[in-house]
Length: 516
Image 1 (cartoon, rainbow, N blue to C red):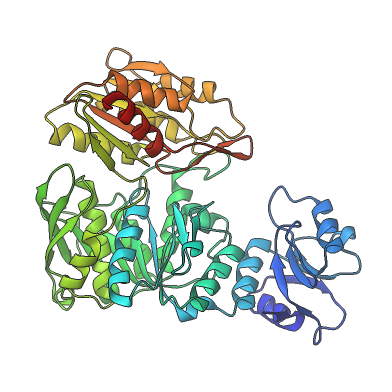
Image 2 (tube, rainbow, N blue to C red):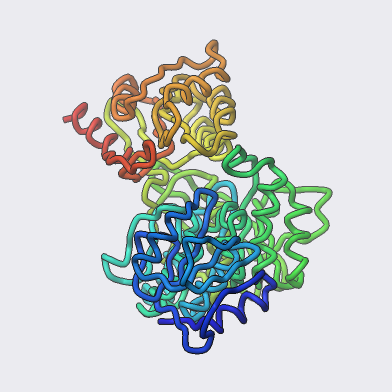
């Protein structure tokens, strides 16, 4: 693949991004590789000087390794002798030029995008499972857990970001297309819009699941309004929108969808019992609980409006996961499957087989209650998880192992305190991707907001020991919730992905040892 210098200039001018250029031959000059990492450069590379931490020495390294053109928001002496494209916003420029370099792979995929404070990953896996049933396993996936770009084992790998940098995203899309994939389901984070990772991308289907305060802090969103604004951009860039009518700030969410989408292409869903006198729109789909137990969830989807009934998806569905909160995620995914052309029988078969790594992985022990490993990582997901356990298991003793990441998600810490106060009896505060912060200080920050007359707290920074102690102290009838890391096999410590067995592995080892 390659892109000419002339094409780059035309694209940047079209989007009013080009401030100036210092180039020689715009016709014959071609770039045969793209990168924003000076360590990953080949001969004739188009190099992006990107990020707040960019240093001019990176450009020197890129030039020495073969880069012949750079894109930046200011000229650098280190780039002397290279073509230079000076732009107003380098992250937007990178998204547009990467899409062009990889020959607009999104045009060859049915692209589904999902956003929300909680439930994105579960919904994405549910929908992928159903679409795979329809297209013979040709559904690519971009999620916070794994990235899937093809049918072979090596085509599935651990994700480093919920939504990759734009260059990596379009490269993954191109790989997926070249591997014969026809659909792509992707999680889109608020940071993806904040940092222009999906700039210029339009989705066939866009989902808005819910919104609650999260990712607010010095390195993320300055306030909730900015967080919400970034989330809403997904709907603005979707051809058809699927919205949870029970979400907070619904009026603003719906208004965002209508800025670019006809109401006939906006689909609303909600629980059958949900009512809102202020809601002016008719809810298209309702869902209802059929049965819950420790290994599965059965629910019903009802098509209410004429446009909903055009999708042949009414009927019963079964999930290989517990939790009534997963019925909403499952309903969203079923609607997406219907809009992609599936009927009830094929969708029901597909979703019934789906498991999500690190999501609600449950083991009923002989003498130590029920142990659940889940990625719950903010107040909304913690409240939903613990609330379900309290309702379904007749007010059990709830023991929680949880930590908060460093360097980001600072706003989550008071949320952990609130949710523990609401439901937990015992909490083990531990390490969870501390980054460059002191994990002891993070734990103490959460502990400061806990009501110790309600919750017994132990700070145990050794995560494996915290899990072992939590399970060991539990008895029949107790619920042990291990939250945050799920299937992740690492801890992010001072910029290094430090190996860690994963919560699932540690919990299983502890259970095996206790129960022989």
